[in-house]
Length: 101
Image (spheres, rainbow, N blue to C red):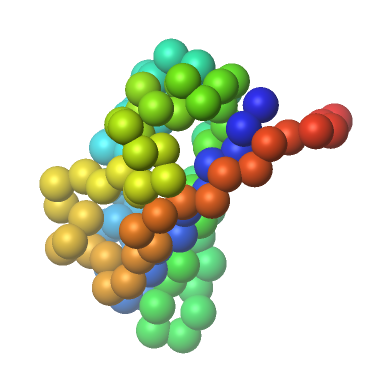
């Protein structure tokens, strides 16, 4: 299993709207991709910004490529992300799981 992690930030005032947007776009985008083994979408307020941490689980590099495209290290964005995000990671981190409970 491979874990894929991405972070982005909104204004705290926009956080609930971005959460709703992610549930309409990103969540089905991740979960409908064959080989996706689950996702965790999290958020944390930090002053006037809110950090979103998206953690997804994949059965293989091929499954990640089916979701992310040719370069699996590049983050996937949706059409209205620019309206919400004040900062974002353009790349993602991947970790191979070697133990789990």
